[in-house]
Length: 153
Image (cartoon, rainbow, N blue to C red; front, top):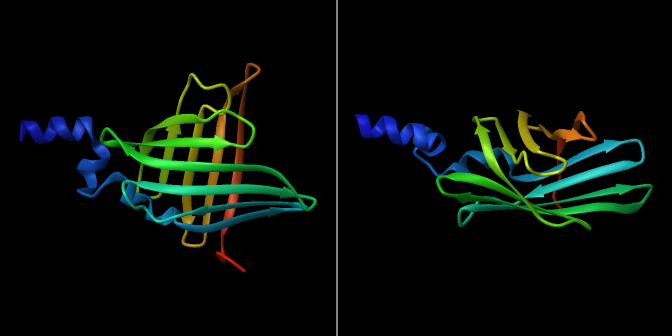
């Protein structure tokens, strides 16, 4: 009993579900799209395999590619980490801070901006992604509402 309590305190995600932590993110798998005026943001997440999910995103505005990002969410030490490889910037790693059955939050307070990256499942057809933190001494949060999209043509 004592060992179970200690393991649950140290590794809450794995202990709660009995399954690998990455398996709890199955709701993120697939293609997602956010459209606002002349801007389209797309994210696509592969199914979890080998202890990892691979994702990619692109932002197109006025018909031109403005940003892209390759992302790896992987198991590490009984938890998860988010490795971002954004266009034109160095890679950054954000350890998981908390996870529920419908959301996940990653945080690295030493990173410039953002310090936190999160995803929330709103329903079967919608998710909200966000980045937040402090920049220039001011708190800032940017949300990306997505709807499930068709993968491919």
